[in-house]
View 1 (cartoon, helix red, strand yellow):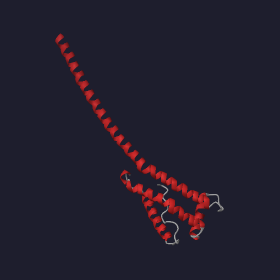
View 2: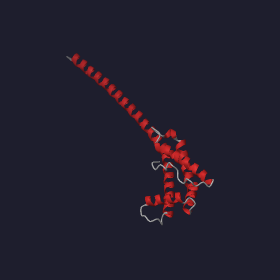
View 3: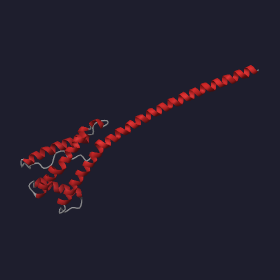
View 4: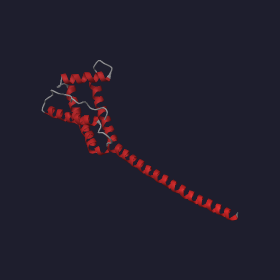
Length: 178
């Protein structure tokens, strides 16, 4: 009986050693999988940080600056227009500029576009064009609209430089989604 007991103890030890190796191997495999996942997540985080640094942060700052600049222009020149809602005042001011392209407001609008808004719009377009490799998935439609807006505004600036004020606003509005 002693031989059987020794054999069983040896078999049990062998089973424990093999189980230990198995558990160690499984834990190392799981650790490897987790390390791979951590590396993938770190890579995604670094990409997101590059997107924020090179695209979304600068675009947001430019968009904010152009929005504030245009809103300030509207508030200054539409203050005397009889309506309390800003959007209605803006529409009335734009209609006035279209009707009277040589008015003081129209001249100030052209100055604002030429000196402030359009250089910022070009910069936004440049940022998007130079960092398209950081844009995931389908190219956003709002960036195509931005390109159209910038190109149309450049054409308007050229026309205005030749004293052609027959068109005061581009066909493609500034994409607010940018």
